[in-house]
Image (cartoon, rainbow, N blue to C red; front, side, top):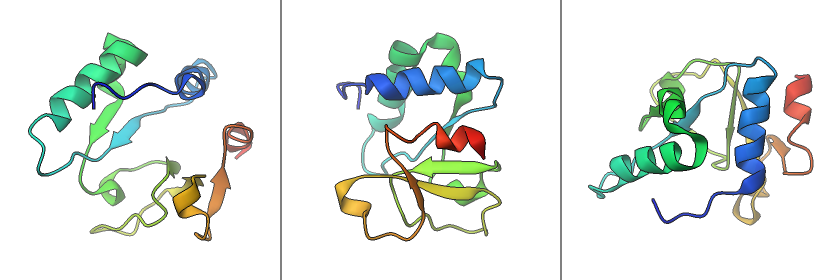
Length: 115
């Protein structure tokens, strides 16, 4: 996980959302069978978003338990214990194009700010 190359637009978008005064968090699921997943995700966030941004990280296997207005995720099928209170917006990828959700791309991500 630590070797993943950051997407420049993603780093810029995260900082822009915060600069506009929105509360934004990184919600990520750890992989069960990797003892390196959680520490490497923590180091990745600190390295690419800044040390203080790790306090905005939520690591959970069940994203339905996280409260918020929106969840932007490439996974079109978020399942869990609860009915989420957030609106699911799918970040477009070739493998999720058949999903029937609102979706965004790098060209349209600022549309979320209008919601």
